[in-house]
Length: 445
Image (cartoon, rainbow, N blue to C red; front, side, top):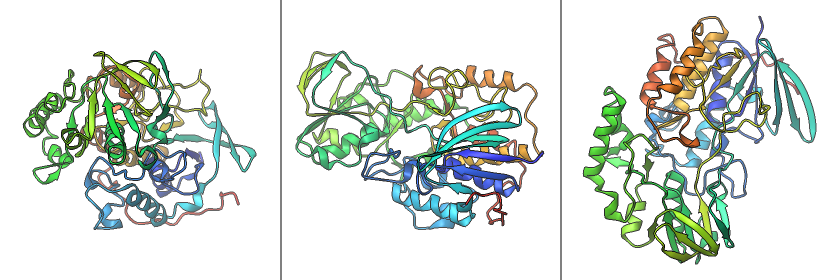
């Protein structure tokens, strides 16, 4: 049959999905509400889709954060070890230009609803410039990302100062001279604490649990490149060895006034940050325990300490959200996500999820491989296993890491194992660096 594929999103996952479908001669069109490709990495000072802020750099190094079809050396050999949001935006847009993707993208378009009709049909309703339009496709690719719908904490009492989420944080300047409390211990929380501490009257950071802070460089190398050398070791043993190495280099959290981790390495996402511990030991960021309750501008912590703040920034993650699906059809916002290789639905054969996983590393190298596998299936070069439902359940019950039970940890994978599992499914010549001419007569004006 002739395929006509719709792709939701033109961030890093969506553009590689589009590129690899077009490579195989498959008719495809991508939709994005922005006016250019890049997703979260299109920085704006205004509140928007984007979750990056003025000083954001990626937390994985460039050699483990690139497409194999279009590496950073192909783009710009002088890109930093940890590229900035501006370098990444330019990289994604160069990728789209290099492979001629722009004619196949409908910008400024919201996906309102996706209705599954049967194994050959999706009915998709979009909106652009106030005009709604419904169109039918044979397949649907979901690549809308999972860092856009903020998840807020819930504490007793009421805080009467400024309360925001890291999704709304764009720069430190609005916090100049203020007393700031940052909630969370992940990458965004530590970055916000560091940045606000440069201008605030006082910045504190509240942790509900202990986190491991990993430096960006170890032995003069990006820390993920050091960790890569042990990728052949089973994850549980590897994480144990990594925890010992980190203890030797950093010391105990208690030495910095931070609560210690109580879970094994990998049970929560490690935090990659070079400055937080420096700021703490220089008195610029104050460690605090979990919040017990709010009383106006006063925050009471679980150890009884009380402090007043002008602003609170909750860096408490995001919901996994697909608002274009009916809730009784697909809802992964809570509970497990039973998808084979984090992309194949157990029963709906014309639906693919690309980039909906959280590696201890970068997403889009895996999204590129997922996209290639999807394209291989659509042209008949690969067949999904007959026992796919069983495999979906197996992935849920036997994750790469035994993580704590929170919404943030439902889609975690081991980066190197996941990449290896995907490559096993692909032909040896899966890399495709050269642009392929594509017909565009199916495009709307």
